[in-house]
Length: 114
Image (cartoon, rainbow, N blue to C red; front, top):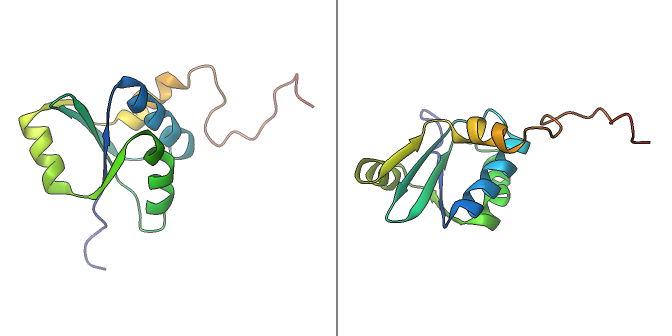
């Protein structure tokens, strides 16, 4: 394959859906390259994923919004005509939402767990 797969784009309605999707993506892929913008009252989250991860990314964020698929032109339009919010929301917002929780991939048990 000469070109990498196009990022997936999700349309999320409201802050709760956005935070839930980002927290779930961060839990699984804390360093997933991503971008977030808002256009006409909806959040559009673009997440880069390899071909093997695409189904998992869809299942992780899909329950919180609509997966539009790989549509870089649509996302560029929303980004240009809307408001760009973050260039790395999965890492930045995800980390903030998971403060005080186990780090992603941390398999150590807490001292109170058996």
